[in-house]
Length: 308
Image (tube, rainbow, N blue to C red; front, side):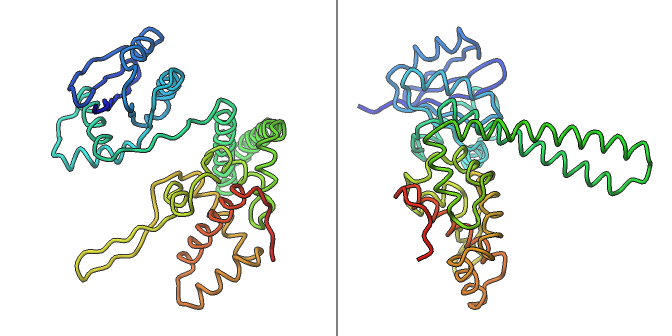
């Protein structure tokens, strides 16, 4: 018997649902009563697919998953590209739900376990840390551009407050990681690799829980470090990376910048690529990809970094 595929378009106050192959469609409110009705009506379906909508989908995913329903959150850009390929120009919530269901039917996205509450908390704390650091960078740039004493004092007061807040967030992150034996073990394994500091390790633990459970190619594609080739006939474009999980990709790129100078294995790898004529940026991305593969193997085998 063919299993049902459910597409859900999530908005602030409402959830539009479309079921394939039956074509059944309806809408519920995005509140406790609506979520309860949704879980009841979807009991026994094959897969439920939603777009990432900046946070509105979180409570929906949590509610559906708590009842044992298989839920996948997909990239909205991919769904939009699929809609264009279908020639679907009209855009309403009900149409979007139908397109999401058809996208899932065509691509068959893999259902992965959702991060638990503690992992989501760590990810939120790390996201807040990134926001504070970005604000501090912006304020420091403003400080360098102004000579007005009152403006400088205002910026300095704000920087002092942000520095205190950053210290508090760092303390909360440290308590979360060091208070969990599993996370503490993962962090200690990851930071054994030259080029990986605690912030990078904690970002990977929070935003890439699949690390250590997938193959090298799979984890590279998941992060967005596996280059994809553009080719047509005699023309061959430059391979590029993209998609995936940008927060993880960014910290791994920073780790690669350190590793290519201080990690003996990756330094030699980087130098070989340069000697072969690879541009520095291409070689650095390759180091980041190799660094990810090393981290994946370390968590898979539960063995720290060894130079020999």
